[in-house]
Length: 120
Image 1 (spheres, helix red, strand yellow):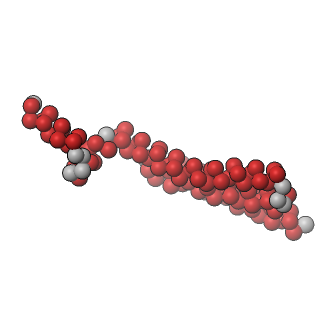
Image 2 (cartoon, one colour):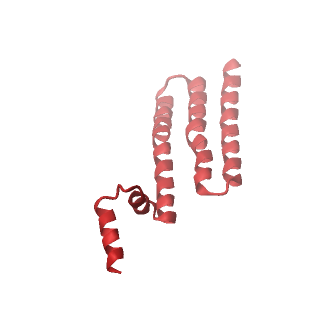
Image 3 (cartoon, one colour):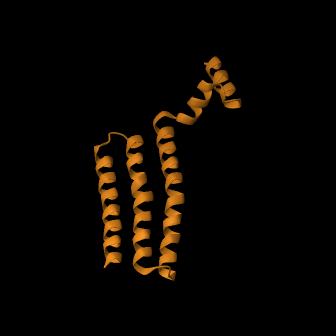
């Protein structure tokens, strides 16, 4: 009986995390802000579901496979969020080249850009 209550609480918390993250995504204005609310959905909620599976069935092959999937999600999610934001930043602002040139770290690229400007 106590095991069922713990599983229900863990699953309820996972649902609450997903609903809160979804509300955050709907309310935020740009992609940079929205990604902050997607991360708990893809990191915290799977951990809670994995804990619920572990409490319900104990250490079995099925729970081990579930935890393997959770581990992949926890590792991959921040990397994918970073890559997504970087892609948006580059697409919106041509970010990488302009930022490096402004900071004086563009090296060869900065030199080529200044030479191109001088030719015009």
